[in-house]
Amino acid sequence: MHRPRGHSGATERSTLAVCRSAGTPGVGRPSRPHRGGAGPVPRFVFRLAGPVEGHHDVARFTWELVPAGTPADAEAPVVGFDVLAADEGGRLHTVVGFLDRVPAT
Image 1: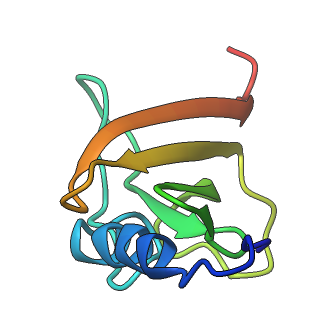
Image 2: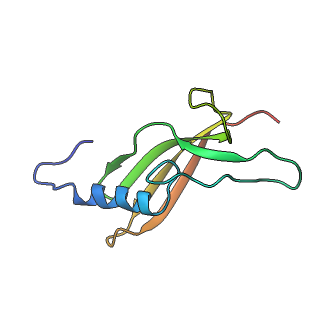
């Protein structure tokens, strides 16, 4: 992470702390299994797919959505990344998500 001269990094640390305390998938505590749709659907869990990177009040991370019980080295059917922005108090005010891989339906 690049840090301008004289910058303490406090905002990056507070953004990452917000991610951890908010239960961001794979950061600080595991996500709960999610159930979608109206019928028999496998339970899915989010897992972090790389480091959380922060710069000033913005953080980004890549995540994977996999069926519960999937081995850690198995390929994820759904992959995306989120960008988070915190306000001056360190609270999240913006979350933007992107889907990089989604199974064909």
